[in-house]
Length: 323
Ligand code: DGY
Image (cartoon, rainbow, N blue to C red; front, side, top):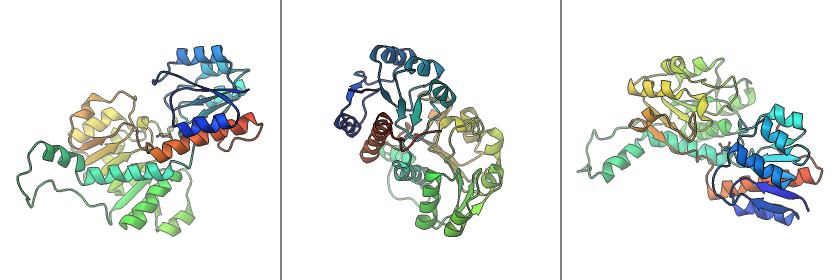
């Protein structure tokens, strides 16, 4: 019977799917991230046929070396796979898969939760109200900013970026502009969207900038001190992609000096650490990498990761092979 290792507790639907395919499933009994040494010890001890991993597992050359000869696939339960050294996986002859598609709507929803919350000062107003500071309606109290009819700049027009653009255009009558390495003229026609040749052009025109690029050597610190200065002082920055795309130290300085109006982010440069300067600021909302964290979506992600394993172990092409 094939043996699967799951690096941490995940929604039961994923486990059930693996078991009903006839596999023996072992889940890390401790609900915590495994260190690299711990993961390698599990791999050496268990001689598993497949491993279901999470974005918090760092899968580098040593890990693939430890898995070589036994593990056929590492199925990452995330759309992002910047935690995986793909070249090392290839060298070890091990497949890697991800879980795209099933989390698109949820991450897009969270992006809007953040966008609206920062523009309408929801978190600040909540703190204000709970602190007993509300003593009656005031014409000038906690004034925010509308999203409707504004310019929303999408950095990265993949599945999630496109979904955010759709809601912005159809739900808020926003003007959508986008930057991507690939131009999409069909999308432009459908949403009246405008392509920006460079990130700089997008930053200069947007009232809201939403980041949806993957983390790559070319996107690390895509938003740095210089590019923050290119944004309008009235603009907001939203990041539900990966933390290192934004230089967090530069972000603290920009917020302290009102270079931009506000920021709402779900991801951090050195997770789970958060740049201390970000914590005390009023003009930022922070959520702990939960953009895909709904009951429905996390179950679908677990199930899709399991489907990739099942395909690989039945000698079929996993539906979401990362190349
Ligand atoms: C992903 O799947 O990459 C997300 O960041 C998880 O929430």
